[in-house]
Length: 226
Image (tube, rainbow, N blue to C red; front, side, top):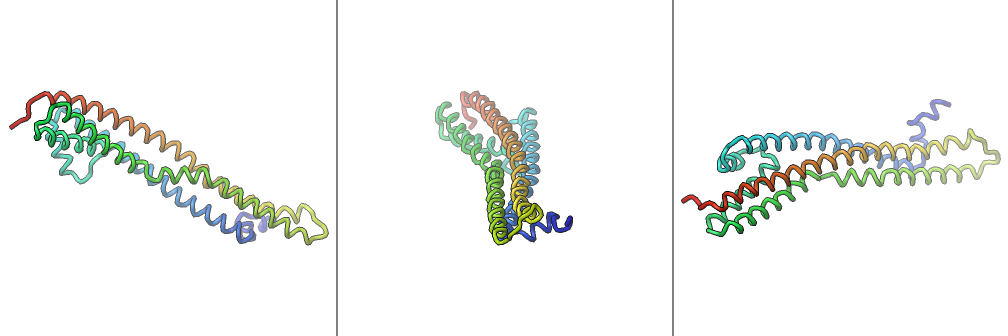
């Protein structure tokens, strides 16, 4: 009896539709865990690169040296790429002898566009976790409802119904809900954690854009070097 009521036995004895639901949920759960571990590593790397560039930026090095380093380096931080885009646009407009306000506006627009691109990359796969967190319980519930319906249809042909005959079918159906929760709960926790981390990164990047814009504003009032 214990062997028949084991999780593996219940899955194998479930109806075909419920088995498909379980297989889909397990596949989604596996992909979700892959995304979660990848996101943990990726966000940690982004934070480390941003902090490293920020230290370099405020270390006293010239803007020209920082731009050359950003251009030549193969591994750059999102903050560094935002800096490079703003600096590149600023220098282009300065060569055209535009006024300081136009130089600053162009640099800010370039940095904002770069910021949005970087944020899109950082937020990649976050919507997938949100979908898994919101949809998986309902998919599991669908499997449970279908399994219970299938169990009661099978019991209709029996003259005597007892708990021993009803329990296996209902247990098989409830496994689908359990698997749905197994897929959804880690996705919910990870989604909330990553959303909070990404908000902090976004605030850090926006703060850098404002601080760098102030530096460019001071440089925009100076004559361009010949």
